[in-house]
Image 1: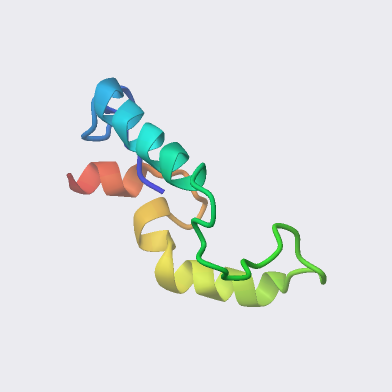
Image 2 (image 1 turned 45 degrees about the vertical axis):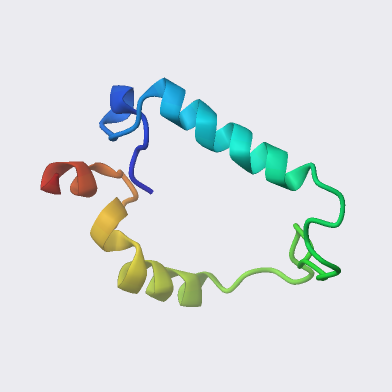
Length: 78
């Protein structure tokens, strides 16, 4: 994932990031924020499929993160 903070090459100031984080935390603190939805568990019930994951990463993520997930390719395009 590309950096968000200006200090890391992103476009957002620390103050802007604080506002976003505060909004996310406030939204999550509201009772019944999910409206009765049943969210998936945070841990998987079965091990992941690394071959399938590698293919998905190569198709959808590597253009931003690079094949080794170094994260510099997006910054280079800005």
